[in-house]
Image 1 (cartoon, rainbow, N blue to C red):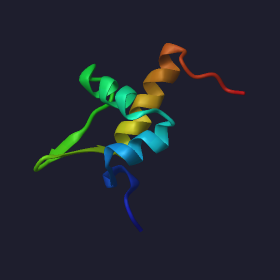
Image 2: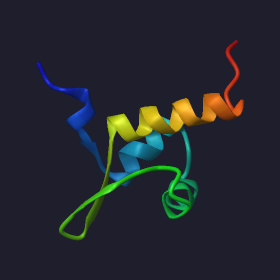
Image 3: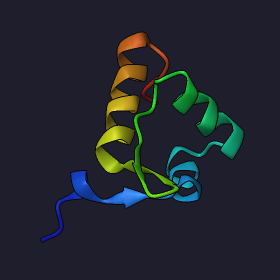
Image 4: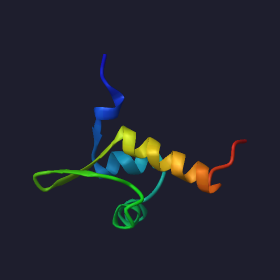
Length: 66
C-alpha cells in the first residue's frame, strides 16, 4: 500500500488538488504557507503538505463546512 504522505506532486498537480492557479500556489510557497521539497531543479509538494495547509486554513477559519 502506498504511503500518501510520501507521494510527491508537481506544481500543476498541486494546483489541481487545491483548485488554485499556478500563481496562487507559488505565492503560498513564497509565503511559506505551503511546504515543498526540491529534487534537482524540480519543486514538488507532498500530500502531507497539502493536508497541513488545509488544516491551517481550517484553524484560521478560512474553510467552511457546508
